[in-house]
Image (cartoon, rainbow, N blue to C red; front, side):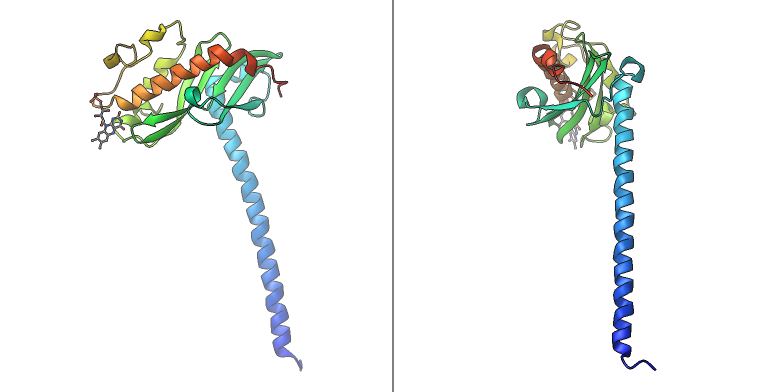
Length: 206
Ligand SMILES: Cc1cc2nc3c(=O)[nH]c(=O)nc-3n(C[C@H](O)[C@H](O)[C@H](O)COP(=O)(O)O)c2cc1C
């Protein structure tokens, strides 16, 4: 007969508690690893939709740098992914923020090819109104593809606006604010690339 049943029960409880905490820590660790891997995969899918994998030979996710140009790129710090082939510049993908969406900031990926033309633009996140401003999503309409292949020469700078403002880009019926703000942000990203693009690729690469 055990003389210290309470001490024994306490010890057993303690051991269960330690095992439980250990198990939770292990599952947490594995889950975090999985989430990081999934996020990386999703980002790579988004980037390669804009900069095809066969046009670059570097690790575009690791070959990134942070720049600060809030007036052009919409936030204090902007991550830029660099695509290269044999060390030569192929594309810069900007994580541009549209500061003045209808319902708040809109996050973009803006891919600018080395010659200053757009590889494409995608809306990564937004809070625009379903049925009005959300047509900027690729899965809702083709509108975002109107940027493909455009540059500061095509159309000329004065035409970088929605049709209502004398530009070439469509607005949506009853929703001009969202497309207007995105057209402006993409134009500003191209202006940044025109002025600073070459210096981005001075970094050693990955
Ligand atoms: C409830 C509500 C939600 C709206 N959501 C948006 C929106 O997401 N994007 C947008 O551009 N305009 C939105 N609008 C319309 C804007 O207030 C504004 O009228 C419109 O963008 C101006 O475009 P228009 O000149 O073509 O009318 C919304 C209006 C209302 C009443």
